[in-house]
Image (cartoon, rainbow, N blue to C red; front, side, top):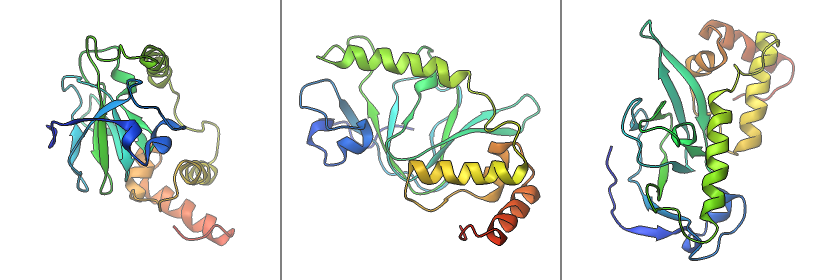
Length: 201
């Protein structure tokens, strides 16, 4: 997918920069991005194996990270919401390790990257942190091992609510593929949670 806009902007001029970077950023400190055209549900931001040209910051909506397994099935690796970064796991590779696909309408910005791209004041630290996070993400275990299916679904919902205030945008099938559960098991788990008092989602 190509950027719809070629104009590079400084994150310091965006009212949402504190949400993306956890605290306000100052002008001229290397937080430069290109805004990407909005994504519709089901549209890919990047495909697995595509050339890596830089990480993307989610500014609205939700995207799933996906991996094609040897048997042809799709594994959902993670969901990314506003303020989170897509592509951390590929910062030290020439290609994208995972695909990224919108599960709701979404917007993203692509961070300046490449040779000489992060040489502004403070950006060297950013790259170091991204590289460290890249290695950690690659070695992430399956989510919440040892929990029952209902406890795993509860933990997923609580984690999603902690990260964003948007309603769950993904299907029960998406949740199942992420948690390693059958769709029917996820449906039953939500029913059990509603009976236990968790509000409907």
